[in-house]
Structure formats: structure tokens, C-alpha cells
Figure 1 (spheres, one colour):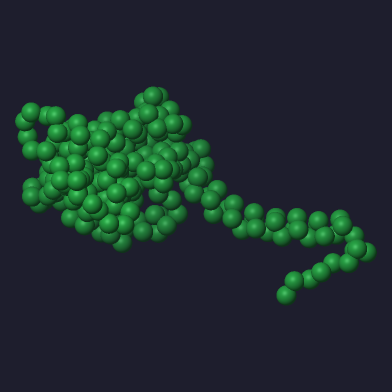
Figure 2 (tube, one colour):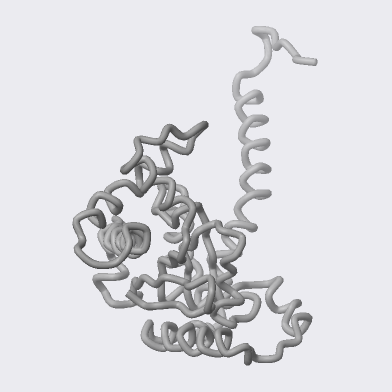
Length: 246
């Protein structure tokens, strides 16, 4: 029930009450969000965080991990070990922009443990405003040293874009909005002389998303220009488990 105030009540008392309530909201919200940033900040502990490595080292770990995965010789892990520490902070070495395809699991494909990868996913592994914001968070507050755009063979989203390009297929729901972001890659791939249109479009789409990220202002572009992060692309082969770097 709302309370109506008479003209005789002191305006300052009403203002103070509002200020008090606002202060309570700020007190409730700030520690949680501020704590996340501090947890990834090496200055908070006086020592470099576990992911304070060169971008090339982060990529090396992913490449070596994928080789183990493809050979079916992954590292043995105790997934309960370190759980308490991970509840306090996260220090991923890389951010992965992956397709949402259920057959692609970046943590498995790169043989990485919990907390090692900061993964964002969407069909067609395209850069959208929300996903870009997530990647910015990973760079700015979590200290990721590498961003990888990960496409995959037989991608349904890219295949749909190919069908729209070749057959003028009409897609339901919001799919046309998704496909419109992939269509330029299909158009470019259609001019290539060798390879299949689908395979070429999958690789071209990855390259274009990598290019978009390299120029994505303000956070990602600045970090890439300063060489504190690297941005790369790869295509995961569903049949072999291998990632081909582009």
C-alpha cells in the first residue's frame, strides 16, 4: 500500500529516506560486482594471476590440448580439486567464441579443465553485441590472453545461409536475422575456385568474425593493438576432433 505524504511533512526527511534506501541498494549490489573485478586483478593479491601468460603460450596450450583430445589421450583430472578456489575467482587463459552446436564442446576439444576457458556460444559463431560484451568482460576483468573464434565442419547455421544464397530459402522465426550475419561469408566463398561452398563459407565466416573482433572498439581493439591479447580463428572437424587453425 502506498503512503501519501501531507504538505506538512519535511521535504528533507523524505529525501533522506530515499537516499537511505538507495544507499542500501548500492551496498547490496556493489560488493558482488566489485569483487569479481578485484578477484581477477593481480594488484588485489600482489602476485600475478595464474593466467598472466603470453598470448602465444595460451594458444600453445590449446593446440597441445586439442592434439591430446584428437588422440584420445586427455589429461586425467580430479574435477573436485580446486572447486573451493574456483568459487572465489576465475582465471581463464582464453575466451572461445564457439558455435552452439551440441557436438562441439570447447573444454573437451582443447582438453582444458574447469576455469581454463571463458566460452560464449551462438549458432554460427558470429559476433553480436551481447557476445562482444561478454568477450570484453573476459578481457577487461578476467585477464584472458587469447580470443579464439571456433567454427566447425557441417555447421547448420552456415548451411542455412548457403541455402538462402543458392535457393532463396525462407527461414522461420528469427533465423533470418542470424543468417544475415553469415551471408557475406557465403557470398565471398561462392567466388572461390576450389573446395566446397559450405566448407569455404565456414572458414570465411570464422575469418570475418576474427576481423570484426580485431577492430571491435573500445576494449578488444585496444588490447589487441597493445598485444596484450591475440585473436585467432579455427575450424573444428566433427569427424576427427582436430582443430584446423586459420
